[in-house]
Image (cartoon, rainbow, N blue to C red; front, side, top):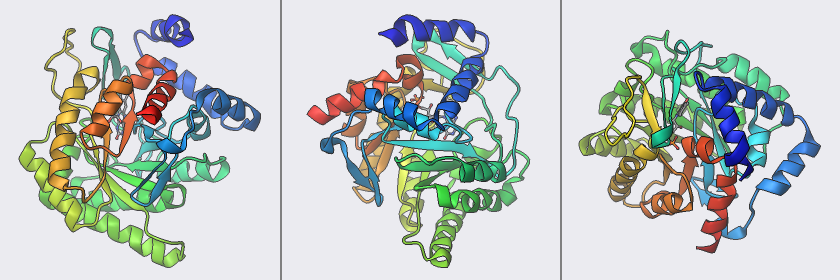
Length: 349
Ligand SMILES: Cc1cc2nc3c(=O)[nH]c(=O)nc-3n(C[C@H](O)[C@H](O)[C@H](O)COP(=O)(O)O)c2cc1C
């Protein structure tokens, strides 16, 4: 109520020309709160919905509930404890790149209010793996699973992509419960080519090998899970190729989907370039999840993401074959109450 009546209109109005203004303001507050244990407890007590019925064990990780925050919201991992206190079952931080980079010129996020959607062309702005690692070493860690999304730096040529991903993986290894290999952002030139069978095979082989080597060297248990995040714009044939690579290379799961380049079904046309997220993505995201589920035949779990705005969308995504779900745009439009709403309903299902 409070969110939709006051907070959202205020935030949307004050950052009408550049949604990032309110995002950065919010992240600064959340980063501050992340160091305040008393406040974190209050936020958790009022927001988090707990029930044994919501707990899940997926790819060797225990999740208190299946509702996660999608990649790209907390790119530098500065506010993870505060975001966790809102009741998420897990958070995907990043996408992080080896080199610090500013991303594309602003504005680079656009709200399509009539469609409950967003277009973004962020281009992975982030502080870079070294700085993020140093920051994490000083920050309290949240109690829920954290996945780190890793991507390719813009300055890195395609033939050096693997080493670029491995660098971030090594830096963040100690802070991750799982990794997501982001090969599906439309905003880094050439990145989506890494979804093609041959380059994806080489990349996933190298990354999974690296986790095994680190686990052996440190003697700290099993290698951490590695997932791959795919675009909704892949054909069935391309998705089948991704599945084959994931099974061959012992990838732990697939996240579907990232934003789309498609603009079909929009009420409000936009000439802005970038990836579309939110309600218009939901149907396509479900199609991809259903197809993946059929192809995977239960061999690997799926994290479903795309246009989830409430309990019904969440239920549909799980019914399509996802073991866990993630939100981004729905969290912006519906506010933090959406997490409890979904979890409450799922726990009674
Ligand atoms: C502003 C913005 C930034 C994003 N940044 C990333 C990112 O850095 N890495 C990533 O894997 N996905 C990123 N995404 C994609 C989301 O994680 C998600 O896959 C997509 O938005 C679809 O979910 P939604 O409809 O719930 O937003 C971003 C999305 C938005 C709207």
